[in-house]
Length: 494
Image 1 (cartoon, rainbow, N blue to C red):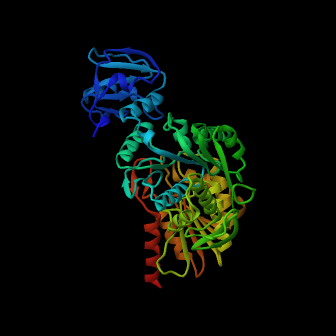
Image 2 (cartoon, one colour):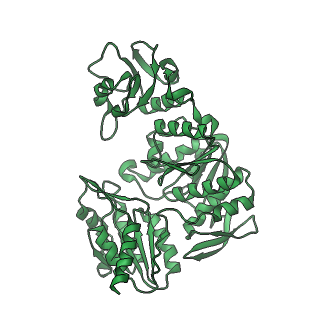
Image 3 (cartoon, one colour):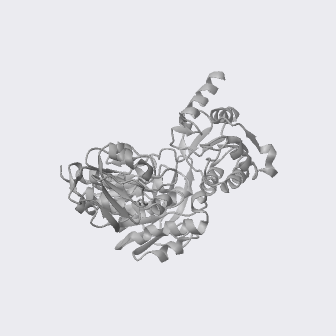
């Protein structure tokens, strides 16, 4: 194996970064790089990043004791050691993108990148695209919320979009395993925090925008502006795939110099769905420019949008329609996305990741169309996140649901009762339609206990997650496991 896993000259890895000054010799071989001082080894390069919670400059001495010979800094520091090289840069995050790309021999050059951004639908859309590409025979990598994959091999993942160092390492692994296409979710945080800095995309997809992450972005305008930056990184001969039913689609279209391809349900577009037929088990539709019906094994109008995005991507990559149709229909479901929990019960239980007002509304609109009887909802809101969406989510839940159990999600450092109080502000006119049960497991059990024949129980917020985050601890918690336990427990009592 060549390149990054052995050694690279310091002069090579820093050649493209904007340097303010260098203190020390550049004639050094670098064997490893990290922004985490604990991961530094002999002949290491440590990148000090001034972050939100911690400042990497405080861990420089630890990095040096672990073997760092080179320190990248963006702030002045008090103590300098004679045998250490210090490189001061304007922006450590940008520097990390260039350094890691050089260290891993610019692996992106051998890959075709497809990025998907939007408030909702990223995970489903990327998985649908991956299925089509694999059905065509392409070796495909996936980077996203549920996990990172090299073909069928699952790798560890801790965030929707890894930072530039982790991305370049992933790309390096993918390149060495013969991957041709990489499909990746691109979050607004990833764009703003320069995790995808210096990457060029062959195709980018815009799904939608609704209120989310305003704890970070502060205003919806800022959020939209950040999302649009992805489309400035699409190659001029590449493609931007845009949902023109979204109110902010024009802003995205204006931001790109690439070819624009549109999709929709309502407006006239390049790829528009017709003859829609919804069922609990799936949805079928036809396209404006193809005759054959597509039968998805996932349901909801929102998933038609996701399928249209995937169809548009595959089409610009010159994949034939029959291969596209087969690839879509092979997807049996997406973990934690409108996931049906089946234990031979006579009522329906659905686990869904929706954790925004818009995401919840989209799912509930579909459920309302399918419901034969009552809709029972379990949900909470995450702590240390956008507080403005909490009352709106409460309002939507009681508008669409016949009964609502308000509970915890991931409270993080906030008190669960404080989060629930915010949700309640949207429920003032519907006091009789909800009950507060702080412990999430008890809330799920109570909802399932309440369910009668042909009712639908929908559990929102955590989806595929297998943990629950509190102020001082993280515990194992899986909505799907708990729902199954509750259904079985109910059967035993009957």
